[in-house]
Image (cartoon, rainbow, N blue to C red):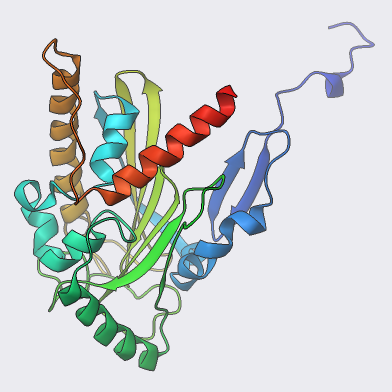
Amino acid sequence: MEKNFDKTQWHLHECNIKIFEGLIFINLSEQPNNFNEFIAPTKKFIEFHGLADAKIAHRQYYPTYGNWKLTLDNFHECYHCQPSHPEYCQVHDKEYIIAYGAGSNTGPASEKFDKVLSEWNEKVNKMGHLTGEYSETEFNDYSRSAERTPLKEGMFTETKSGQPISKLMGKFKDYDCGYTSVGTSPFNSLLMCNDFATLFTFIPVSPLYTQVELMWLVHKDAEEGKDYNLDEMKWMWDVTTIADKRIIEDNQKGVLSEKYVPGPLSEMEKGLEKFKSWYLRHLENSIN
């Protein structure tokens, strides 16, 4: 370039970045919303698991030949979980799957699970651990959710045996046999046991292709082969995501066929109905 070329005037577009608990949040808007306001409802759930003191034990991609909407449809409902995911059902109680399987209050109410949850909350509060949940009640810019719930009776964590697998993370003093689900957006989910976490990111690549990324996190001092077995830790969400990939790709073939006709949502898909309404309203606002 010429001698008087000013490099400061020619650079990549800037973006807004916030780092919270080791998670990097990127906002491409020129006038982003207040980050503290955005993170507030899920903050205590993320902090309790100590992700800032975690490391990536494994990262894996599941290329999915389906539209991002079909991919999220699959993830944000658990109507299909009992017939399609025996491994998931081995870890999570049937009544939990009905009421909470795809996130906070995403299914019909379950009196049985409400009783189990109430008793578990009482026990966990005595341990000094976090309880509670959050879901959006009014339309806004965000689609956030969080809750702590018990795993299936006898399960300590999301492994085939249900037995502890790694070092306790964050502020846990002992195993409370609980499970924390946090959604910071429809495209990101943090699914966290007491001793490891599984992070989902759904990346729309093209109209018929979505990249699904999973990261498994453990305590920064945990050593593979000594403190944890990677295959045991990956087991549940790996086999479940592979099964979901097949379901999504089959659905995509059906949607593209000349015989495709849209159908109604079931009562098990309240979370999906909520997400679609939120998305369509944002789309309508952007057009207007």
